[in-house]
Image 1: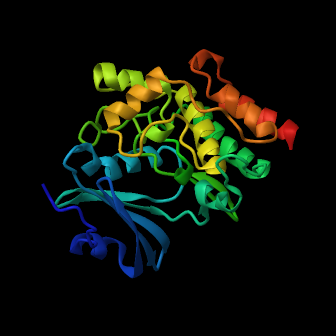
Image 2: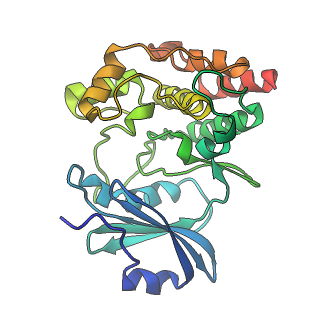
Length: 276
């Protein structure tokens, strides 16, 4: 088992992308991410490595590239390194949804959220679903809101097309703070689950809720184990949706416990267009 990083770019990776400069973005949960400027433009370079609890994180960068090659026109690259796989993809400029709403976030009296931003997030998710894919890891930090629009990033857990067996792995849920009850139940009962459009919609509602209020969608202690977090999601109702304005009612629909009662992402777009 390797250390927990952050890991510098291996020599053969640096030779492949020829960085002019680099900035460490994040190192957690089996992934070191660099913001790299090259002669061909700015790139996000990811190094995946196994953690004590999860070995699939080592394969995630290469799996994401196999997804991106089916979705975006830009060149993306991947390969292997000492502890797992690596990838290089276009950098998406902007702020995350969570950071963008931080100035107006309040646990009991949140300000009315920006419906234009909310709509842009729903449009990004609708676009993915419209191409036959589900994201599987919708969360506020994966919506990057920038001058060129909103991008939905981090597609390593996406399902909907062909992924090479050598880089594929079972879906074992996402960041629990945004997990739909049926996904948590599947993980608890079987160890794996099937990501769906309905679960993505629930996660988008939970992402808007936490970005507006700072609260997770279900109440559980900060130090709770993943098992206890998922059990709370399965057995407890979500927190009251106190987000003001039309978005609050839309979130309530999106976070229905019954997946069949949730609107589709395209329905959410239509409601937001009417509300703006």
